[in-house]
Image 1 (cartoon, rainbow, N blue to C red):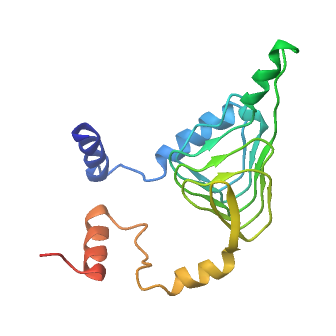
Image 2 (image 1 turned 60 degrees about the vertical axis):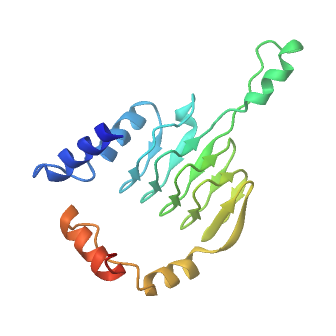
Length: 181
């Protein structure tokens, strides 16, 4: 834990540190493995199954850390007594401007539409329509992304801090949330 904190601080204090550099390296590696990735994506997980060439991401997709995208069904193994070479696969498609939250699992054969939000920890299977918020295990559509984004935009805790230095970001957040004694 201390080593991870030291690495983070070294990067944060490095004047040459570029916030998107890590995700750019992940994207290059995934593309080399066959994942089709649109423009403007930010990807913090590289767990794209054993068949990454079955995964397609649209433009502006965000994938948080710990996300797993699975393109095969391991349960087919149970059939191997009758069919020794059996395997089962499914494509995974994620539409433009969609965000997949921390530790979500996307199962084979899943198609997630445009402008969707998949909540952290959700397990998603099937077809998710455009403009959907998806939550849970199993994941269910619980609302529309457009309504959630309107609420988020008006929330006093939503701040424009993405391009601030770590110290400026810290000050802005603590100023807004109040400092504890």
